[in-house]
Amino acid sequence: MAIRMMLGFVISLIVVLLLMPHFIDFLKKISFNQTVNDYSLQEYKEKAKTPIMGGILFIITPVLVTILLYPSCLLDYKVCMVFLAFVGYGLIGFTDDFFISVKKNNDGLKAQYKFGLQLLLATIFYIMYQEHSILSIQLLFDGPVINLGLFYVVLILFMFTGSSNAVNLTDGMDGLAAGCTCFSLIPFLIFAYLSENTAISVFITSLLGALFGYLHYNVKPAKIFMGDTGSLALGGVLAALAMVLKKEIPLILIGGVFVIETLCVIIQITSVKTRHKKVFPYTPIHYSFVIKGMSENNTVHLFWVVSALFAILGFFAGK
Image (cartoon, rainbow, N blue to C red; front, side, top):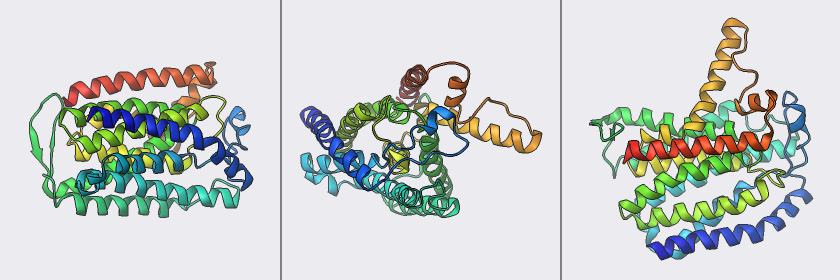
């Protein structure tokens, strides 16, 4: 298992490192560039010419590498479920990115359609998942197991839509979302390895390798962004891994940075609509650190550290 895991990481890393420059040139030629909202901070309006859809490479690469190294993974329902969520949410994001690139504005796929597709995919996931798994959750720190029955579908809908949109909200600075996701994947890699799930372990290491390769081109100054293609896919895969490894509740801690980003946005919107006052200088919350004088690099590194701490806490909570 260990050899396949290492090969998965190395092959995915090399593939993305080698192909990404050519992919960036291709996206520039067809003008698939980032479109920045008028309300963005001035510094981020300067990134409008940066290509998007970098997520395509780190979606396709680990899936193909996993199949190459472990062909029988396609007979493992857990891997198929993870692939479904990863690729499915990536396709939803791709559709949104495509419309943004074509229309040259941030309208993209209409919000109700995007959310509807996310719910539809989560429902399909539940229908397939409930045929193979127990619809129960275990509370943190080896707490009691609770059988949710039909209410498990509500958990799935909440986790998939919440996780995918949370990563999407976090994807606002060079290297931020991808780096935080790397830390969030590590506990799930350990869980999969300890349970001797070779296929899932190989997939996670392959995804980590692909993300490391992507980060080489995404850290400041970013040469490419993942777009909704990448952010929705990463959120979807985190939720799927939590489901198939039966670590649904620990995901809240493991993805703590994403949870905080989302809660801050909800609090801000609620406060503005009800009190006509802001709670934070700016949301998503990572922008507030820049407004207060912290550099983008230092903000990203701070969030990486916090993400690592949440990952450690989430691991022990779900161990």
